[in-house]
Image (cartoon, rainbow, N blue to C red; front, side, top):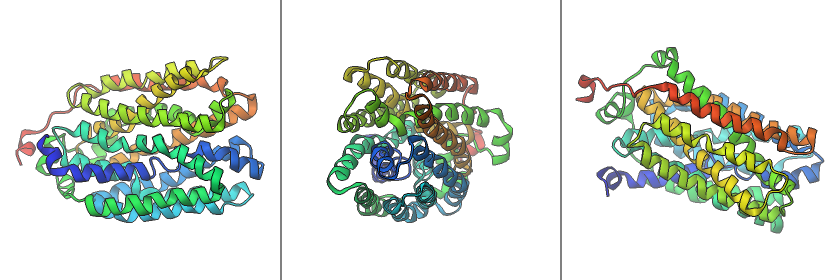
Length: 408
C-alpha cells in the first residue's frame, strides 16, 4: 500500500461516505423514481416536477462560494460534521410536500441550502491537501461514492415507495446520511487541511500557489467552467430523467429503477479508472476522450427500439464519463490553481456545473412534455458532451511549481 493511503485511508473512507450520502447523490439519483408517484398524485407535468432542480440549483448557487470560503478558513472537517445532519433534515423535508408545485420548489430550495455542507468541495479539499503522489486515485475512490449510491439508491427508493409510499420513502432515505454517513464522517474525517490554505509543503508540491484574482483573470478558469458546464447539461438531462426515459421505451418502472444500478457501477469504475490514469497521463487529454463517450449513449437511446442490452451500454457509457466528471474538476482545479484558495475557486466552478445540470434536467422534462418523446433532445445532449470535452484540450501544460515554495 502506498504511504499516502496507509496514513490517510480513514479520510478516504469517510469522504466517500460523505459523497455517497451527501448533495452529490441525494436527491439526484432518485428523482426519477419519485417522478411517477409524485406527478401522478398531484397532477403535475414532468417538466414542472423537474423544474424543481432549477430551484435546487439556485440554493447551490447561493451556498457554493460560501462553503468554499468556510472550508478555506475553518477546515473541511468542521463544515462536514455540521453538513451531514443538516443534509438529512433537508431530504426528510420532501415528505411534507403539498399539492401545490410551489411547495415542492420550496422544499428543494431548503434542501439545497441545508445540504450545502456536503458539497464535493468539502471532501475533495481534504483529499487534495493530504494526497499528492496518488491524488487522482484518492479522488477517484472518494468520488466513486456517488456511484455506490446510484447502485442501490434507486432500487432502494423504489422498494420503499412500493411498500410504504413516497412520503415515507423520503424519510427512509434521509436516515442514511443521519445514521450512517454522519458517524463515519465524525469519527474518520480527520486531517490537517489547514496547511493547504497556508501554502504548506504538500499543497505546494501538488501545484502552484495562485490567488483568486489571478485565477479569474486567466483563461483556464473559464475554459474549465465552460467545459464542465456543457458536460453537465448532459449529465442532468440523463440522470434526472433516466427512469422516465426508460419507461417511455417500454421498460417497467421496477426494471428501469434496477437499470440505474448499471449507472452506479459505471460511475464507480469510471472514477477509479480515471483517477488511476490521471496520476500518470495529462488529465485534459484523458477528459476530452472520456467526456465524449456519452454521445454514443445518446445516439443509442434515440433509436426507435431500445433493448435491455442497448440500454445497459448507453447507461454504462454515460456513467463512465459522469464518473470522471467531478474527478477531473477537482484534479484540474488543484493542478492549475493550487490549494491556497482551492475551496473558493472550486465553489465558483461548481456554479456553472450546477446551473447546467438543472437546465439539462428540466429541459429534457419539457422536451418530453412538448413532443411526447425524449428523442428530440438527445442529439443536442451528445453534442454538449463532445464540445465540452474538446474545450479542455486548450488548457496546456500544468503550471510549474516554484522551487522556493515547493521546498518549504
